[in-house]
Amino acid sequence: MQFQTIAAIATPLGTAGISVIRVSGAQAIEKINQIFKGKNLNKVPSHTIHYGHILNTDGSILDEVMVSIFIAPKSFTKENVVEISTHGGILITQKVLERILETGIELAQPGEFSKRAFLNGRIDLVQAEAIMDLIHATNENAIKVANKALSKNTSRMIENLKAKVLTLIAQIEVNIDYPEYDDAIIMSKEIIYPRIVELLDEINDILKYSKRTQYIREGVKTVIVGRPNVGKSSLLNALLNEDRAIVSDIEGTTRDTIDAFVNLEGVTLQLIDTAGIRDTVDFIEKIGVDRSKKAINEAELVLLVLDLSHKLTSEDETLLAYTKHKNRIIIGNKKDLPKNLEVETSVEISTLEKKGLNVLEDEILKVLKLDNLVDKDFNYLSNVRHIQKLKEAKISLESVINAISLDMPVDIYAVDLTTAWNHLGEILGNHQYGDLLTELFSKFCLGK
Image (cartoon, rainbow, N blue to C red; front, side, top):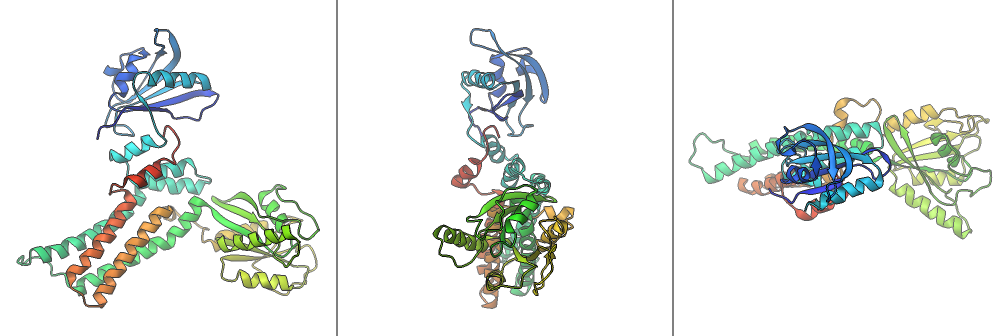
């Protein structure tokens, strides 16, 4: 596949030691050689670096540079690639880029280098998305998840499922098209059914563990709830180890949700401190209460704070009932005071004395099933698009089970099996669908 030669700045624009400009395309080496003073770049080996200068149109020196050469197909895009390391000033980097574009090279669009790598078969779509995940990773475990996908571990898992489905389709088609073949396996429902069940078990297992991997990649939306003045904002500040939320003894101090992020042993929590949920005539506070309820409904983890020094109130009971179907941890705060709470809690802490916070952090990881992670835990799906496509493949396989239960002809099974195979292929990007590719790669930064 032949594309126009493109260029873009691949490093953040700003004052730094160096900036890197990436050029890719069939004419990349030839065009850069026209404005480069040093070795003849058309004659140098691949994967070599060369010192020289980028020249202005009048032959004067624009900048002193190092030029790296990668000859197709041994490059990231499988095209000829040139990477020019310039001095890291904002103006000089722009000037060098402008000089490159004067040769007829086009300015790259966001994500266009990665898109070319995908379209040229250098990487699949899972790997392409993993590049973006690696760039935007917010914790060490997210980096591990991205690297698993980037090294094709995740892709191989999907390819294995595809191969099993394709084998079934092929065997059914052989029976239909070539019934005279004596050595062909007669694909009866008794043979097909256990294979479909095995595939569904495998998919269910992937989906089960993918939720944890999704938590690692995207973070966990965690809401802190409780009646007014139980220490919600104090808990937020204690976990962050900073005074992010206003703390006072006046009820209703927190009138809106407050967002913050904390990293717990490689897992990112998006902490949301909410207004206390209670009946109120204060219009502004009521808005905060409504937002708190919305935050609870959308949360993946609820930290419900109760006051150990007081008996259970009607507001506490309302919150216990409201959150009982959520993934939650019941926290007893103010363990530094005499205990009067009769309800059993998951963890007891004192935000004032900063006691019990380590126990709480361990409990959070335990509830999310993110404690004691091992290497294989990072090799499941973490991308919403991938998970949705796998669920669609599962539905198609379940349709085969339904067709078997209705004693439908074997050739009908191939239709749903083919649909399942296509959905799995869409995870890897085996099918060309331009709008999706444009949307995915537009989210990349320039030069990537």
